[in-house]
Image (cartoon, rainbow, N blue to C red; front, side, top):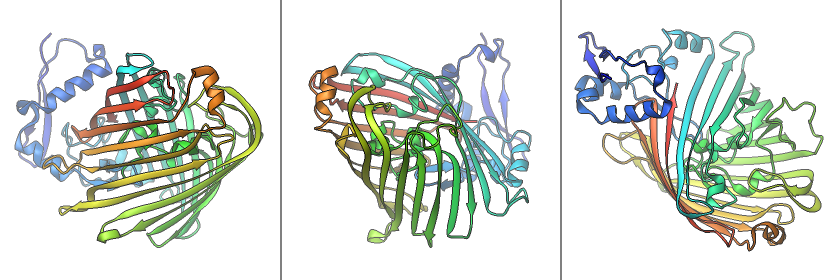
Length: 473
């Protein structure tokens, strides 16, 4: 097969284009993994993508914004029609602007974000089983601004659809928590496409809004350095959301609530959540059939040492009658029936350094604490801390890194029940390190390393290594 050669050519008008040599074999025969690997090779080939014109466009169009705790995400050209470089590296999405359809729709209030995250993770030693698995997660978000459509001022709609394929390594580690959580949601080992968000938000004023519809759990417990849904920062669920809170609310269900803000420093959220997991359905038939969940969070901006940071405190109460451990972190084991459960949690992030070229970029510390009801929650308390942020390396401004440690205490009330199935059960802990490298505007490759000491006493410490590839379309 003849090799395809890709490079940027200067057309002399401030633009660059992609030149592709003929290729005798159809691209349809190449798998997604092979394409990702080829792109990585192209990135490091100076003859392919190393000319000054391409690098100049990369700097010009590397527009970034900070969205909650998703860290720095590339702003799509669809939202900035003045930038139209079609270069393979400069475009923020693999498929480009769809012949200017994206900016046209965006100007009318309709945007579509789609990405595919692939995982090749494995247990190199220890754990319940030494093996490597390939898995993937498709995430598709449609946002509609009805004000731009001239239909209703302040009204927006968010629709999220997601699906899985392949198999995660959750069982191979021998731990109760997934080491690659984004490869285990919305439902483990289920490859159907699910609508997990269908959420209307109405701004009543600049500081108050109400929302209602279908929502998912991972949008809460935001943290600048340890969140990202498991696809942009850490992969282990311990660094994505507080594990003690997972027992309180289902991953996706109907919800309604409000948010209030005081300036730009403090935001308060209150939400009534259906207690039944309705990922598979619209949720109206199951609405409050098993109870309800009340969730409240307050997040405030701090300025310690004249550097930005955040403090978040939250709590939740579930009215449901608990008679089994039926959440995805544990098998469906029966427990003595208990009516109602609660949890409180806290997290912080604090920058220790911001970079002179951009005060919104830097690195710092993070931490989480959570306490749960030991009668119903398999995890009685949780603690994590670490460091993370944007890469300090010259020329790698869009990269991110993180290193963290967690400790998860098993409930003394439920440990004997777990021991009947697993043998001795104690507390679990682990560490994770990652480096998220932005190879292009639309492609991120993240090597990941974890050491997990499972709560199961008959399982030796698991050494987990993996590679995560996220492509924005």
